[in-house]
Length: 249
Ligand SMILES: [Zn+2]
Ligand SMILES: [Zn+2]
Image (tube, rainbow, N blue to C red; front, side):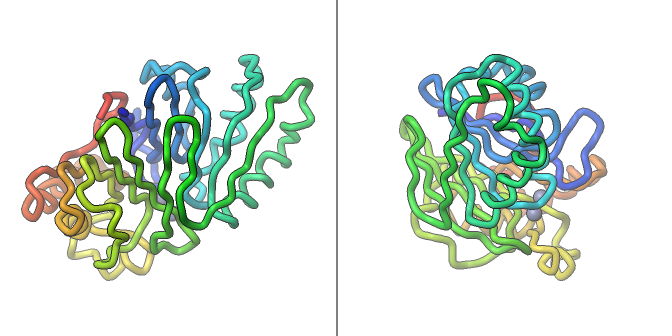
């Protein structure tokens, strides 16, 4: 199992970098997590074949995590896709995603492939070879976190979330923790109000979970802040890293 970052910014994009989204590949299958920027373009940049994509997990309804869904589906259809596609999210996110699909009348297009919706608030969902463990995190709207174990590798993705000391025990020992960071510890009060974590809190989480590597994502607009965020995270958790696009983790 490998995971690729297709983007890693927060709400504001950077030159050459789009909002945070992931592609998880295993045994010729790909699961996308959140849809932003230009997902088809990003998948091509990462050399991930479109035919391998079996599902999309949308963590929550915030625009930087969901807005590219219609474009992805439209381009799948233009590309001649016939295989069904799994679309996964909690109740409010599935309802919102269905509205986006309806707005563009995608399912009325001739020969449009079938969308298989999976509404889940927490628990295990198997999509092809991948068993996804989903659980709620703390954010302004209902939001899902993800844990996947495959080929002796364990990935945990905490998209937008407030820090808590009470993570589910099945997150323990993650090989890779991909965690959002909204700023530095001096901004924590404001970050918590917006449903986000500081670099210190992401590192704290990596320590709590006994993770092996921490990749910081959902970074602020200004790349000049990256080194400060990294320094703050590394002060607590040495194996903290800034994100890289299109490399297999
Ligand atoms: Zn976000
Ligand atoms: Zn959000």
